[in-house]
Length: 84
Figure 1: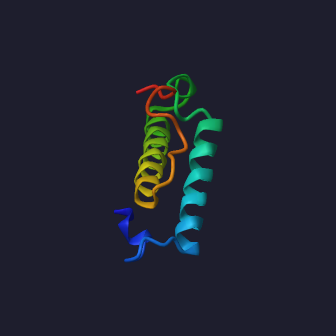
Figure 2: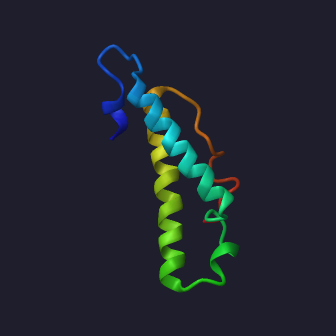
Figure 3: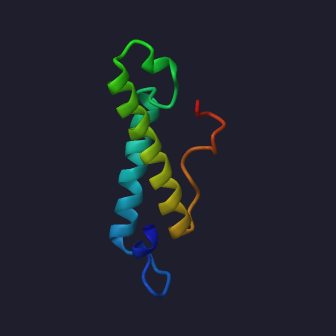
């Protein structure tokens, strides 16, 4: 999916770096809001809790895919700090 971010020669362009930066910011905001833990979803309606869970996992997966495509480290440790 994120393979379009790297050109044929493996060079990163400005859009690749911006994409990784924005995904990183979104993931950081998700963690700061507590969307990665079940505790944050105890006092909210079921639908809102499901949306929060899906938002976190979308950012988490996109960060992994883009980081792998660009050969960069991922921003969040693999499932050690994430409540599944």
